[in-house]
Amino acid sequence: MSDIQNKWDERYREAVGNYPEPALVLEQNQHLLPKHGHALDFACGLGANALLLAKLGLQTQAWDISGEALTKVAVEAKRRQLDVLTEQRDVSAAPPAKNSFDVIVVSHFLDRALCAQLVDALKPNGLVFYQTFCRDKVENKGPQNPEFLLADNELLRLFAGLKIRAYREENLLGDITQGWRNQAMLVAQKS
Image (cartoon, rainbow, N blue to C red; front, side, top):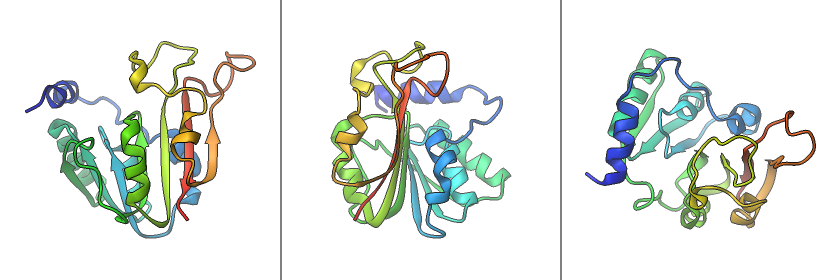
């Protein structure tokens, strides 16, 4: 068992109060999803995105390094009477195969080296929904290591080969007490 796996297993060993909501990028843009197909919640944590994808009728997989997290995803999926296939894997070491998913959702995870492989894993016309933390943020939430924080407009550069369908990154512009801050979100489509 790796140190990273131990870290995340320890975090997810704690009891879950209210189950988390799906990422805002998915909630606000779920109308862009296909009616059917194969979906992946990549580095899923507690799998809130996977649960929504399954509820909407997609054949859904949830991958994470933490077996503790995946056990909770499976229990919650069963409670909601949803089919979610969980798989424990180090997603950085074992990304998805080429042309294997119609939808890939990534939230609160950043490994820049994997972005091209995520694009390759999309089937033609497939969609990636991506949301994670930015370096320029109002509140001190999320990771502190700059390696895990997006630079300004970085998601646009990481997925430059795709058609951008939705993008939001408010950064520190204007009245920082208003709006959606600290993160960037993108929905992009493969040709």
